[in-house]
Image 1 (cartoon, rainbow, N blue to C red):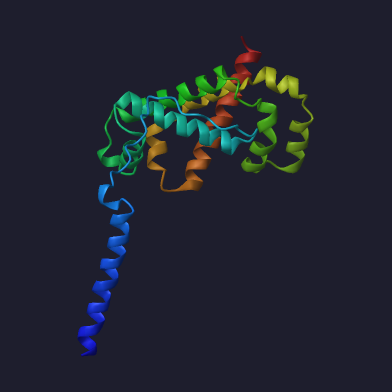
Image 2 (image 1 turned 135 degrees about the vertical axis):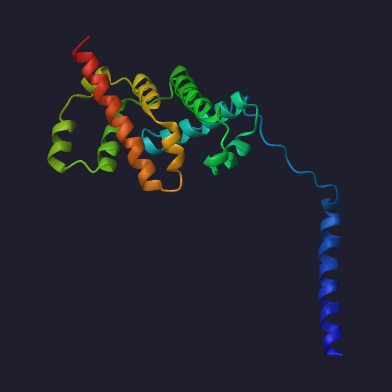
Amino acid sequence: MRGVALPGIAVGLVAAVLGVQVAAGGGHYVPRRPANPCAPRAVPPIPAQLEPLAEQIVLLGLDNAACRLGISRERLVLALADTRSLDPRTPPALKAGLRDAVDRLQREGRLPKVSQLLPGALDQAGVPGIAKTLIGAIPSGLVDNALPTGPLLRRTIDELDVNRLLQQLHDPRQLQSTIQSALLQAALHQILDRLHP
């Protein structure tokens, strides 16, 4: 008798839950459509820190790349998980999308100055204390004049090997190291360009 009662109670409970769900409109559930990646999304205020800035550039860049490829941002993110079957148009679309993101943030006056980003970047890069002190002694105006944020970020994106970057998505430390290296290289090249016009 007990063996029959327990399954009966379970079926009754499931039927009750389903009844409540249907009564609440669950019978007419339609999944939400993904946002149109070609429609500009609102960008929240960006703190003058490297990580939130990078996050916004990546989110906007993914939208721009998805728009170029004619797919949703969600579908693009899922496609990035399997780089073996990646559409060959994706890496160039990503690079162009990231550049477009920087351009938009610069147009809207949303890019922080490099002097504001520098302390956090030096901490992340593990720069020794004495070097941080020396770099910190450089006047902010000089830093910002030598390294305007928009051109520095565009140059970083241009120098990124997107295919290599996509291979490193599974290893956050390696990914961060690659991005930091590209950022430092871009900064060095930009400074050298200023010294040797």
